[in-house]
Amino acid sequence: MIKTGDYNLLRVKKETDFGVYMAAGDEEILLPKRFVPRGTRVGDELEVFLYHDSENRLIATTQKAKGKVGDIVLLKAVSVTGQGAFLDWGLMKDIFVPLSQQHARMVAGQEYLVMIYLDQMTGRVAATEKIDQYLSNEELTVNELDPVELLIYRRNDLGYQVVINGKHSGILHANEVFRPLDIGDKLPGFIKSIKDENKIDVVLGKRGYERVEDEAGRILRLLQENDGYLPYHDKSDPEEIYSFFGMSKKTFKMTTGNLYKQKKIIFTQTGIKLLED
Image 1 (tube, rainbow, N blue to C red):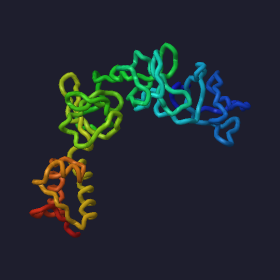
Image 2 (image 1 turned 180 degrees about the vertical axis):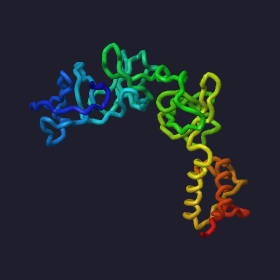
Image 3 (image 1 turned 120 degrees about the horizontal axis):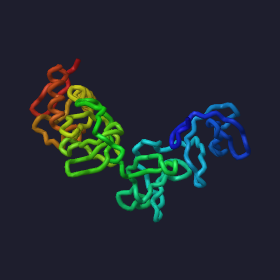
Image 4 (image 1 turned 45 degrees about the horizontal axis):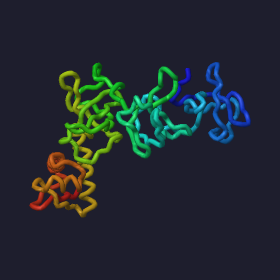
C-alpha cells in the first residue's frame, strides 16, 4: 500500500522519454526524467517520495522533502494568496497551508512551525500551524524521568511549550533554561514531573548523574585546554559560569564537587585546578 506524503520503495515498471513509471499496485506513478538516477533500468527498485503535482496527479520524486506526513517542521513561506500560503518543503511544488490552518496570516519570507498532514477530503498533503489538535496527553506514552525528544513549539508565560516525542505537550519552565532557544529547535530532555490532568514538566539534557557525567567531561576538557587551571569557583557569577561552560551555576557546583570526590581536581582560592594522573 502506497503512502502519499512519505517515502515508498517502488519498482520501475517502464521507461519513457519523459521519465519512468513506478509500479504501485494497479497504479503507475511517474518519476520525471530530471529525478531519475543515472543508470536506472526497468525492474530497479527506488526509494521515492510521493505527492500530488499542480494538476492533482500523484507523482514521484527522488528529492528529499524537509518533512513527511506526521512530522512537525520549521518551513519558510515563499508566497501568500487569499486562500492560504505556500511553504518551501524541499520539493518542486511548495506545500500549502490553508488560511483556516493559520494562527494569523502568514507573511512571505517568515518561518513557521507546522505539522504536515494528509487532507482527508482531497487526499493531498498540506500543512497546519494548529499543531495542538494532533497532540494529546490523555493516554501518555512516557513516565517521569524518561529521556525524550523535545521540540520547542512556542513561548508562553511560564517559559516554552514543547512537543514531546511528537505526541504530547509539555512545559519547559523559563527558570530551567540556561541557553538561547528558538522555535523549531529539537533537543534531548527528560520528563521532570507529571502532574494532575497529565500536565507534563520537562527539563533539557539528561537526568541526574548521567547529566553530571556529560558536564564533567566538558570541565575536564576545558581544564586541559587551559593549562590545567580555570578561574571559576562557587562564588563566581552565574552568568560568567554559563557564558564559559554553557551550564548553570548549580550544575557547575555539583559537577566540580563530583570531580573533587574522584580526585580529578582540587579547589584553590581563585578557581579549580586539574590534578595530574
